[in-house]
Amino acid sequence: MQHSHATRRFALGSIASAVVLGAGLLGGTSALAQAYPTKPVTIIMPFAAGGTTDILARIIGQALTAELGQSVVVDNRAGAGGNIGGQAAAKAAPDGHTLFMGTVGTHAINASLYKKMPFDPVKDFAPLTRVANVPNLLVANPAQPYKSVKDLIAYAKANPGKVNFGSSGNGSSIHLSGELFKSLAKVDMQHVPYKGSAPAVTDLMGNQIGIMFDNMPSAIQHVRSGSLVPLAVTTAKRSPELPNVPTIAEAGVPGYEATSWFGMFAPAGTPAPVLAKLNAAIVKVLAQPDVKKKINEQGAEVYSETPEQFAAFIQAESVKWGKVVKESGASLD
Image (tube, rainbow, N blue to C red; front, top):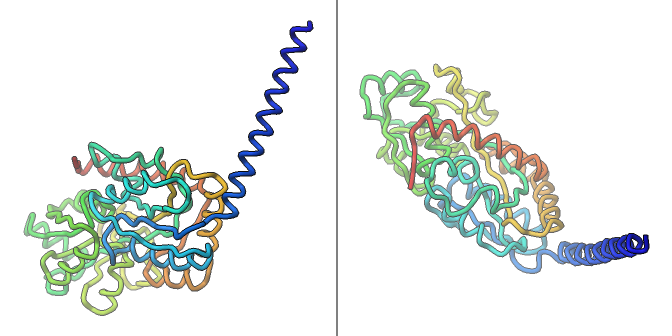
């Protein structure tokens, strides 16, 4: 009996000690969150400057500079479909001073596409929130003989392998939007990968390639200037920014739908109070009218959510795009 009382006293004492210790740790992390950030914050952006990911990262970074009271800078680390930047961010100190602008590619496609990944998109990152959903826009050089999706399909069927479509890299959402089109429209087209969207668009405007399924933010300015011809949007509904441009499904490829998304992450192990502060700050700036306007003008839809909702969304997207990768036969070392 005495033994059981002693055991119980020891257990209660251990619990009390753990509670005190836990409170101390929580107090420490809470103080850390209040002090955060103590130096400039870097957003690692895993693609070339000038593309959609870069445009969105800079809009959000500028707004976060005012919100957090520290300068927020964008660091471009392009290559390997976003994996070079992803690896750098995964290895960064988990203190909230390094963030990562992830995409459908880095967090829902690459793990199915690459035989070896330099990071684990689930275990190595703490999701903060999605920031935008973006339609891809099927655009063509004005010198090409096709001015609609039906024209393009007819031309591609009459000239197998002669239509070159560019992308921001192997396995990117831009590449897989093209693979999905090839599969559903039953056409043979040649994929030409680039190190980012911007150099691909440059070659498209120079007529080195015929078409591209580009993210709307990096293509819309060239459509507005008349440098590129919009054939269709890849989403299920038309874009409010280009209401006269049909969806690919409307234009003759029923069942076609592809959306790119972009979100903010921190390295795994970043203290929970810091993650909460970052989520709140990003959600707050995304609700600001001027930030919303800048993002909407790019043809993107602002989107924010809780880290838990973002994590569940990523899981669903990984399953969806994993199937597209498998059916396309795409694979990279």
